[in-house]
Structures are given as C-alpha cells and as structure tokens.
Length: 69
Image (cartoon, rainbow, N blue to C red; front, side, top):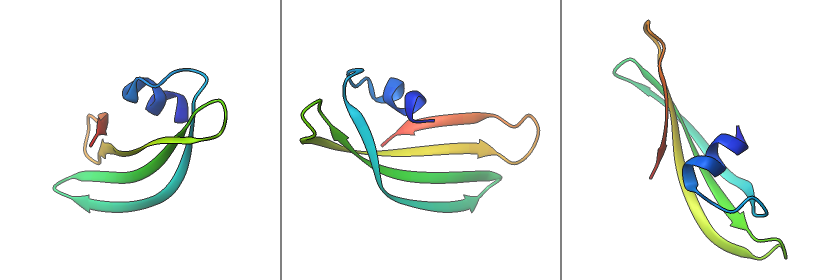
C-alpha cells in the first residue's frame, strides 16, 4: 500500500514513508483508515508529514478511494 500512497502524494521514489499513527472510523456506509506518515529523504531526514484517508464502501460496488488530507 505504501507505493499507492507515495503515488497519491507525489513524493520522489527515493523518499520513504514511515507510519507514525493510524485510526479507524466507520460511518455512512464507509470504512475509513486514517494514517499519518513521516516522509523521509534518502539521508533519513524528516522532510514532511502527511495524512491519508483510505476509504472503502461497505456496500456493493465496494469502491476504494485514497484521499490526501
């Protein structure tokens, strides 16, 4: 999944994402996982913090969305 998040964020390939927290919520037919990541450059220095909401509909059709917040 991290590759999908890197693509959604548009960060360089040599940077890494490190998950620092996650929460879950469910409402209105949506199951959402909310992640907070630190973006680190090739030298290992933190260059940013990002929040991503990964949602999926619990009813057919079960669509998935990745939202950068």
